[in-house]
Amino acid sequence: MRSAAGDDPDSGGTSTPASPIGEARLLAGEKTGPTEAAQSVGDSRGKRQRVEGVSVGENRATEGGKRMLAAEEVASEGVSVGKKRAAEGGERMLTAEEATLAARPLPPQELPYPKSGKHSEVVAWMNAMDALHNNTDLGDEDSLCNILARGRGRVRVTKSVGSAPSMDGRDMIANVARSIVNVSATEPDGSVLYSTGTIIQYDEVGKCAKILSSSSIMCTKEGKLRNPNQKVSVHLSNDTVVEARVIFFNGHYGISLLDISTGFTLVPASLGSRPCYGENIVVLDREVNYALVVSHGWIQCLEYPFFERNHYMFASYYSHLICTGGSVINNNGEVISLVVKHIPQAAIVSTSIVRKCIDMWNQFGRIVHPIHHLELTTVRMLDMVYRDELWARHSIRSGFIVAEVCPNSTAEKIGIRRGDVIELIDMDHLSTVVELEEFLLSLAWDFLEEKLDSSSTIDIKIRVHDIFVQKQVCALFFP
Image 1 (tube, one colour):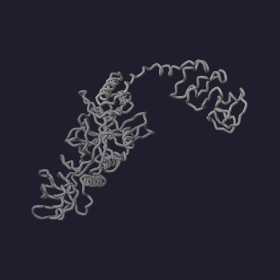
Image 2: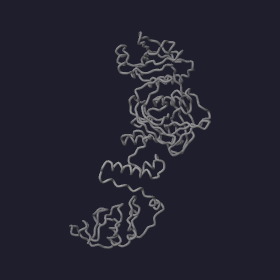
Image 3: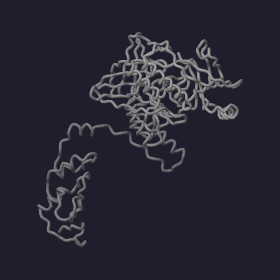
Image 4: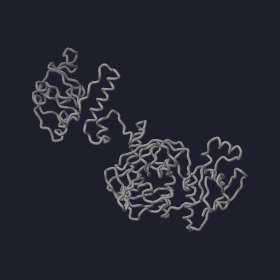
């Protein structure tokens, strides 16, 4: 007798006579009454739980005779078939894939953990386990196979400095990394220079993409092309190298824009707004072998005018790789700046400036910017003690401090001197070097739009504060 309530006929269930047909239906997992599929069914000779993925019982042959095994019982992924399969339903030939999988060598047998729990014995056990795993030949020590097989939570510290503390942070980095590529420039003598690049546009119809990178591997410090026959290539994640066409490069801002054609689907990065001082960031680079380098840091409250590059901001982070072109991303996974120089701090250019340069090139076919021949820092970046004194004694709350004046320049001729504080009249919203540079680029846009020649000037009225004498008002002309 078979009870629908359990293994015991006396458990209170309704008894029904067993039949060969009913037996076969039960073994096949079909419903024979109001009970649901996969409900436990028992008999006096043993029970069988019909749950997908569980090994077939050893006594199947004695329950209902030999039968063909259900497909899911044979092919359930990751579940081993019992050794008594031959007695249950006959032997089955393994497929080539199954035979290859089963023939793989077993890993080293784990050493038993010391029962005493003494510190010295535990340390010895850990060293022995490390030696056991390290002796396994899995290729390079730093290869992905080794990292996955040895496990134990090890992190490639030399590659990924200070891993993201949260799972969301890790996912964000992994997503942006799909847009980070390697850029190389081959010199006529055969030497190769490398930089990191970022996919910022992708045309799925035309199968082409635009890559933002540093100009350092293409031009000199003076902004001139290293060699007209230089070959520039982009290394993609699928071990594919494609030749790139240089759309433009600009030595002043240290950026370049490349164009590539490829049959592979690429993922462009999302460009954000300008960085904020003190903001936490992640810098992504690529090594020569395409390994991802992840560095965590922040935007420094620092200004260091460098050859009239007043637009530089600076990022503080540690990386064993000194490379230009790395993308600086915020906590939202947006690219907010580009590493263009190490002096020795990482000098970065805001994506707000990069956007204006790209738009200007697309509109006019060139990039221009007014030259004021001044090296500037901002009042807001002063130490709080001096900033408080400047406000209390001179009523100066914002503006730009003149760090250097180029000899024989227009600025020098009209009387601007080192140590002066200048303010742009009716432009109080300009309080950072990045905002000032964006303003100058907007002037250059008007310059190109009105089709002015190179001898034209733009008049900007400023207020010059001579801290040692008095304040005065003058006009500064940008040639």
